[in-house]
Amino acid sequence: MKRGLVHIYCGDGKGKTSAAMGLLLRAAGRGLKVVVVRLMKDCNSGELLSLSRLPEVTVIPAPEKLKFVFKMTDEEKAQYRAQVSSMLDAACKTIEDKSADVLIIDEACSAVETGMLDLGYLVEFIKRRPEGLEVVLTGRNPCDELIELADYISEIKKIKHPYDNDTPPRIGIEL
Image 1 (spheres, helix red, strand yellow):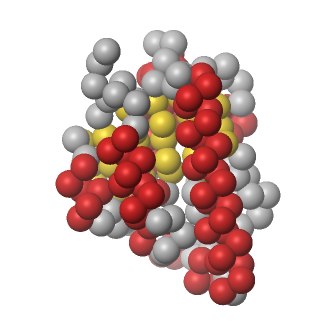
Image 2 (cartoon, one colour):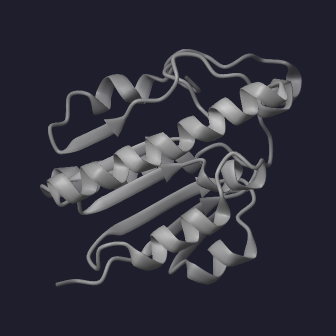
């Protein structure tokens, strides 16, 4: 059995999720089974419409609506932490049931940084994952523990972004 590797797409630039989706397309195109967990994001995303058409891809449902963590009350943070745990448990069950080849945990680094995902849980999962499971993590600031576990790390640096000029996200481009 092949050894699965750990990828991190990080940085302050646009394209971390897009890079993970590119890997997903390559894997699904070769018949690999992919499981996607989207953290820190709700269901308003164009890629979900495309992913729903790929039989090799399973997307764990995310919340219908989600606030930025800094706008959440303590109670909302606690509820979302519980939801994150539930989403990861669902991903683990799906991996066991369908013998997945690739797991993408989008915004995992950001979820750890904001306290929405327990670092210990994530580290233990990565260390104990099935031998052939490829794991892709995205997010801005991966912590040292995740960096140590990674086999690939690609940093996406922002040089210029329309958001800096108050241009809102556009359907089909950022959403």
